[in-house]
Image 1 (cartoon, rainbow, N blue to C red):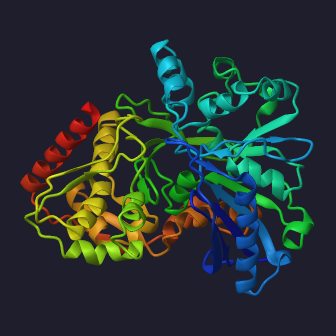
Image 2: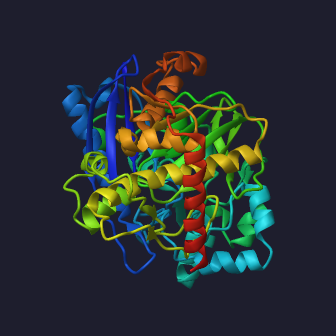
Length: 494
């Protein structure tokens, strides 16, 4: 049993990758699933479809690897964070579609709580801000809309989980209701310093304790799969939220190490070691990992739209046949046309946290066209990352100057990564294995199984496939970023 199966349940697709005993990917498969938009600002997934696409992907990946479930030493799970699933314990039936992390339906609730003065306590305990992004207000919305649901929750008949908990429950046939510390830290109910569900936050959001899963280390025993799911009972041995899993896959184990994942959105994590650094710049203080009972922390900045800007060019405007065509189109852009895109399609994330903000284009002329829009979409990720890096340096001035390690689908764009290096004025490193989220989940499971190396050995194995070095003049960098900040200010003012 020298293989590990990583299940990567994301925002638009579920994927599975088989890794061998040397932590090399040998086969993978994926399935997309339907996005539900019941009204503006609301985003939902069918929880059953999430589970089914994970199982289908796992079965296909095992078949392509030419192995069976009995050849697996374990399963690692990584998942879209903050998304809320609520289900019946007796039947395993979800009582509502999963409410996705992008969903903004509780913006007014968050605003009211902030105006009532609750945000300082929420931030002090959870490290998070009062924003619809996180799980607590989504879950409260579900319970408050139906008195019968709240009564069932208080009676212990319902279970809540982020997507990892839901998958563990289904994979184990309802025998295990658990999550890991990284996912718990994204609910706005977990005290990141006390390492427990916070009685105070549960009281604030009127959250019955009976709903909540047990919280375990990232590398731990999460039960075994029901033999009927994959064809054999396989131990689940590692769990982490997608961004923390990516940081582990990037071997960002030392304080000061920094990674950014560019998928639908962008999420940057700066490892701060065993110190939970509070933010004065509206970043998040979150759990980076909990291994062997020891918690490490990170400062995190969340950008809601990164690769989704390119998807909009493809799906919304029809300018691209495939997202990968954006690089070639951007290369044809006229350098004199300085078009800026502020892609606030679902609001602005860190460091602004403006859920009502909406996207805008600046600098349009009669000569601007598809090439200029493609370039603006790719470069918007770099500008937003610069804002995050500036905030991180302000929050933790003693942090060493860090090289930025990147991953995710958008990191394949040479144009986007070179501009990122230019606007940051820092080196950007892209690893050989871009699937670092699945790699991190596999490493956790393999570590627990005794198959994979320690943190130090994992770090020694990491190397860059390509290193981007800044070539932009300092004056040009500063001018461009100042213009970007004026564009953001205009969007916030509307």
